[in-house]
Every structure is written in structure tokens, then in C-alpha cells.
Image (cartoon, rainbow, N blue to C red; front, side):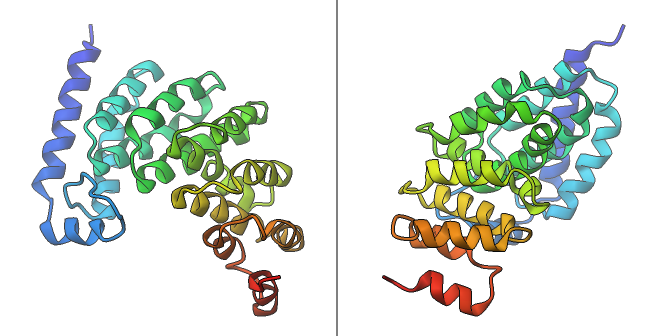
Length: 243
């Protein structure tokens, strides 16, 4: 009989050793420049992290969802950004098995483990975004996250909709979540919902532009600049003009 706990322990140890073996100090310093705060990382290039994630997925995919969740949480718990990226690579492969109830698990992970924008975005855009597209009825959870006191849950509420918004979906929800976050003072939250509005503008430029004009007196400039990034120069100028 397969001992899943032993297998998971061995897999986590193997992944860590492989990441450490190819870590590079220059890569670590380069990665750190993208963050204001110090982040935990080995210094492994993204392509190599993805290669390792693909390699170990062939072993992990024989496990059940509960076991894969447990292994992902073990990697997230370490605080190392590359280990989090491995978990974030695996989880979208479970989309057929993901259910709205899993959002409670994911909420706990965001609160406890996702402590920088790279972890948050990697996890939310692919895994939670896919779950929401499959189960739109669960979108109410994102609205609750937007009202949280946790900066990463608030950012998650926005960035989880990035891929659907890019395709023109959930526009009303995009505006609703942006409205909840509109005057938030945290730049990570401002950039998160600004990015969401920017992606929504690919298919709905007029609607997003009108939303920005209506709310620009209350919208932090950081969020506003993100939101209008894809717009023509004349629309950018009008949006940035102070009344």
C-alpha cells in the first residue's frame, strides 16, 4: 500500500534540494529588486522553476486532491518564493476537481503564506481565476475578500479576475470589486485593481474609461495610471487631467 505521507515528505525534500542545487546569488539579487520588502527566495530562474514543477508533477498527479493540497501547503509553508511557484504551477492542473468549497482552503493559504505580490498573483490569476470561470456562483467570495483587512486577500479579490477580464468577462464584477477597493491606501491593492481595470479595457475600453472618469477624484493616481495604460494618448491625457 502506498504511504502517501512518506511520498509527500520525500517529494518536498527532493524539490527543495533540486532548487537549492541550481540557486544563483545573482539571480536572487535580481529577483529581490522587484520588491520593496525582503523576500525569501533561493535565486532560481523562472524557466528552471517551471522545469522542476513539470518534472515533479508527473509524480504528484497520481495523488488525490487532498494529498496534492497537503503537498502544496507544505511548499507554501516554507516561505520560499520558488517553492510557492511550484505549487502554483501544479494547482491549475486540478481544475476539473476544484469546487467552490476549495476557496475556503485557498483563503487560508493567502492569509498565512502568500506574503508578496509574486506569490499572490501567480496563485490567484491561474488557480482561483480558473475556479471562478468554472463556478461563477462563487464570485461572491471575492467580494468578501475585497472587504478584508488583509492586503493580500484584497489584492487577490482583484487579480483573480485578470484572465477572465482580459477576455471581456465579468465586467460588472470588475467594477464592483474596483469600487470596494477604490480608496484603499495600500499600493499593492491599488496596483491590483488598477491592473484588473487595465485588462478589462482590452475588450471594454469605453466602459473602463467612463468608470475612470467618474471615479478619478477618489481613485489613487497609482491605480489610475495602471487602469489607463492600454488607452490612446488622448484618453490618457483626459483621465490624468486634474479637475
